[in-house]
Image: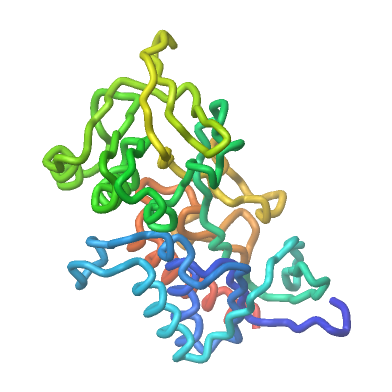
Length: 312
């Protein structure tokens, strides 16, 4: 390392529920820890309206849970550094991290909690109209579509949760799904089916997002199997929730990824490189929820503590 670098016990990259939970457990284990994230602490929680499956809490706003987790972690003295990590260089003695300002830090162990990003539809008009009617966050942008018609694309929990949120403000919500059944939980399905503002458009895909100088005006629809056109739907906004892709750009070479780019770990959340752990939405796992990300953070932090103790 350079003379300006500092060697920490543990560096956590990402401040979502997994990263913050890891920070709490790392501080409780008396590790010299720093958490680094370029965004607001809480990650995707800040873009979530209501969370109803956080144990012990019937209902809580995502931003409130993010603030509570951040306050909890900082109450133990966790240092949160608002910067971007540009590169991770694994080493036998320690792992080197380069920041966007040129600074270098070292750590005996690293926890990657970088999460994911919305998957794109990949249709004409999508990227050109991002911010002009195309959105990947109903909580962020729903306000702009008060009393307007919108489309929600997707069939999982996130899509139906966002459709229900949009139904509170929009005049009409069209949920477009490529299959004849949803993947979302039954409670959400029943709520969506019972909402008079929500119309289901099943066995259908969006083939194009149509716009004029003022922004989105509608979507072109097609049959998912044959590709045959199924007409157009007039809407003022399109909200896309078809899954997430891992933010794996920082994952060093030598760490195994699955076919979809998610990091493969062992039961301790450790990767193929000793002392580097991956948690939450970045990691290959069956379920991706706030509670599983938090559990990952707990496991990885305790495993990292054991690893660091053995190194010392």
